[in-house]
Length: 419
Ligand SMILES: Cc1cc2nc3c(=O)[nH]c(=O)nc-3n(C[C@H](O)[C@H](O)[C@H](O)COP(=O)(O)OP(=O)(O)OC[C@H]3O[C@@H](n4cnc5c(N)ncnc54)[C@H](O)[C@@H]3O)c2cc1C
Image (cartoon, rainbow, N blue to C red; front, side, top):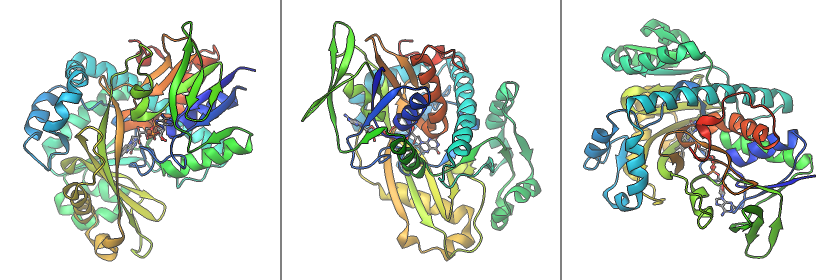
């Protein structure tokens, strides 16, 4: 039987392992960290939102990034010191912000995201996965009527492809999420997306690991891969400090470390780290909690209910691999909780809130890389940016189909490694 090694035990690596195992492949997973899902998949926003399929390099993004250089609170912020390392990636990011390319990426991403939410649901039911999942949709609220125009145009553009949405007035907002009652005077309306879901990505990773191990799949943690073994244009395996792992195929699903692992192979993937923050609040003693993830358009941030927790999430900073927690960013997210749910914020012990930061693996054209590289047997599943949780199961099934010569359920061409 053909053996496949998967580098990375985040959402993408573990999902790939599950999808390949389901198709009868022998798989083994290697991850550098001490436990699965400790990278970008750890405390992300928890939202599976096909409704947010638009890449961040929308037309006009250059003006936004330029003005962010001098604004410490800007939701998408470029840091001066990161410009030299981001130069090539940044040029491609801007080149892909034309209206035509952006529209193409939105449509491709939506096809993958909506397929993926369906696959996540199927896995949840098939394996009885427990990850605080909720299929309550998501809601984007607006604080002035003109702010709704862009998101409404996007929703209308994706409607023919299957995106369901409801345009809500304030009463409609409160019908779906009564916990927003305290700020009803500040809301002018919302878009509600019934097909979106939510769940804790780290719990999902741990549940997948348990399932894989019960199936006899090796999930090795604390094993950093140092290099890929390639001979005569074909992958032979990977090298760690202590041993060589021989395999017929290798899948690199190492998030923001994917380009570093591919160094020297001739494969150059345009993926950069886009730093994000979350703050997780324990809502155990706060009485009833909201049930729907709410995206506050004005604050470019969201709050997701995850079991008895609330998680505030937002911001993108281009600052290289600087992992320091910025107090300004954390304060912004605590303020978001106060701004959306003042009564809950008053009941929660904010000192016990858990701040977190990590890097979204952001491709310069806003689409992930899924498929075989120019090295035979070497596959990529990486670069999912702000939607890696949404797209994990679908990307894994797509890649598994390609690797086993099955016809994929969706068009794989937009995600080809060499495009
Ligand atoms: C603040 C924030 C909020 C987000 N919110 C959402 C959201 O609400 N919805 C959504 O869809 N997406 C969201 N995302 C994006 C999503 O979390 C990521 O796209 C996704 O987690 C990427 O998964 P991954 O498996 O590619 O990377 P990771 O989870 O980073 O996994 C990569 C793994 O590779 C391992 N690795 C790296 N190098 C090596 C090596 N040399 N050898 C062995 N192992 C290695 C790492 O240890 C790591 O475990 C968010 C991201 C952030 C940062």
